[in-house]
Image 1: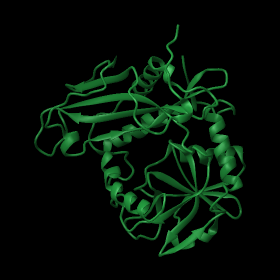
Image 2 (image 1 turned 180 degrees about the vertical axis):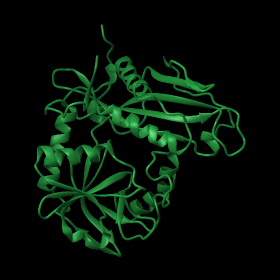
Image 3 (image 1 turned 90 degrees about the vertical axis):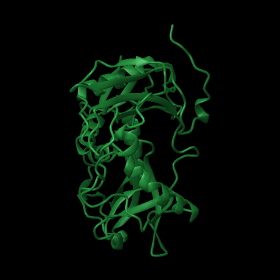
Image 4 (image 1 turned 60 degrees about the horizontal axis):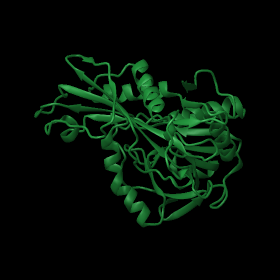
Length: 341
């Protein structure tokens, strides 16, 4: 008989909750051990761990979804594995084989399946895989040992009152350095964004728009998400840059725009001075799928896209299609869905 949990799914936010089991594997002497599910949600590591002092760590985020017929499925976990390995390579950590990564995620979801919210609640089970450098180390060099772990937390729908546009402000701060770690999902990128985010919120905005660090003329990211715009002739446009974190949601939306909605797609420079080429705009990522952008404030002027109060029709169609694929209501492209059995 499966377990049950006493959770008001409609009241869930995006905050930590201890679930029953998580996966932990250790890399030592040149290889990963088999890994195991454990109850303890605390890690005991050396005070000299590189993760604590030199930022040698990275993480991922993906979700498990319950379908109408009560199946549980993951959305493109192999892509998260590939992206995590790109991050690992960038900060000299051992890669986690894709099969091991996906298997760890499946084990964690299966062991905590009673925490997967019911279909129709809008809530999901969020998975957080991560790799950290541990062990006794003092100099600036790679750690002697590493931990790969995956834990899960049920999270509520991102838009409590329904999806509505929000405004962003262009930041004077850089999210990442040119040729730095912007394309890797490492904690330092997020630590550097905390202050600009707080400044934006104080000014009454949802978050910052970051421009390219070399010329400060091109849009790169929207807070911790990727930017996209819909042109007046219905092209899906998104920035291209070596310092942007490649969003799995963004590339999924590009495929949907092209193959499901018959739109043209362009990955290219998006200049902040030419916002009027877009009739709609949004930010995309795992948490919200799409956050519609009502307006962008730049040089004390607010450029409004479709509306500050209503979601644009193309943005809505993109959201509904991807959301439908993730929850099993729309047929997914081959290989996008991995069922938890």
